[in-house]
Image (cartoon, rainbow, N blue to C red; front, side, top):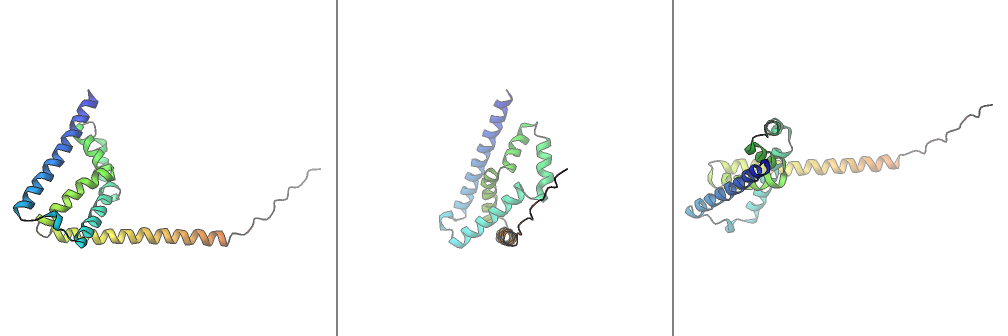
Length: 158
């Protein structure tokens, strides 16, 4: 029975997602916005923003309290489904993509949030790159300066 309820909530969340995507599409059409007309620059900006917000929701400390709250209350089936969404980068990324599109096209000053998150995404990539390069240089330096250990001499007991 538990698995049936869980599956029902998962299906309901999927249905909700498709319904929200359809409503978003309806308003885009009503506003004469065609997502296929998006420029490469806008696509990159949205992608970086989606990446960054997904990372914040799924991994960053700022959302840890919320994730822990949802995990602690996952006896409620809705919360269990929400837990699946916010702890899975692929699941969260789909929802966040829809949210970022809504912010970008429909929320006043939402474009500003999208750009800020995109810039934060670029900064995040640069930090990861510098960490990787720094560790790489450190490891190479460590190997280069590695001195052979002096041989261990065991004293013979007489």
